[in-house]
Image 1 (cartoon, rainbow, N blue to C red):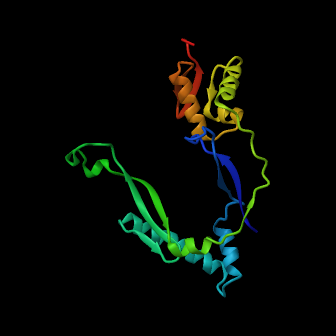
Image 2: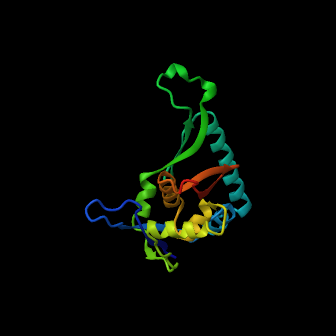
Image 3: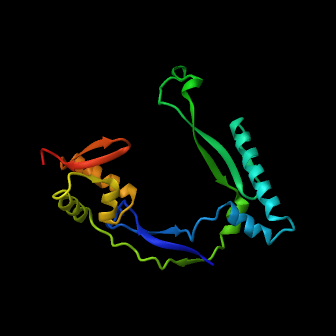
Length: 199
């Protein structure tokens, strides 16, 4: 089985001709979870499935504990796990205390050995039907037409109408707000957009 890709247009137009160039994007065949990895490893080892699963689960615990105590974890041939932190922005380091620095995410940096193994990976064009691309003007027209019969539009609905991803949807909605065509309000963790009173 080969890895798959699809061609998508860049959000930022080319400076020379104003067109949006295409780039290749990975299309996963699915997600392999612990049981899938154990099943695949079982055919390559004399260890039982239970032994392999137990070893992987133990490795999970050991990695989590080591990260918790401030270590990077290097798995030779795979890569290095580390920790990313967050805190409020300040100009003077004296303004930050340890209590205000928090865990943000786990980082991963692949090893050169893993990258070398994947350089020759075969790829084929995905047979997934590509979504039609709409211009910003078309998307704005779809939005206004939708809001004629609905009190608001969410980012999720906008993405469905315009066949676009989160980044483009956020940029389009932000532009329409800046132009005074839409207003935004939050309901819990969701942002809703409606026609501006001044439009």
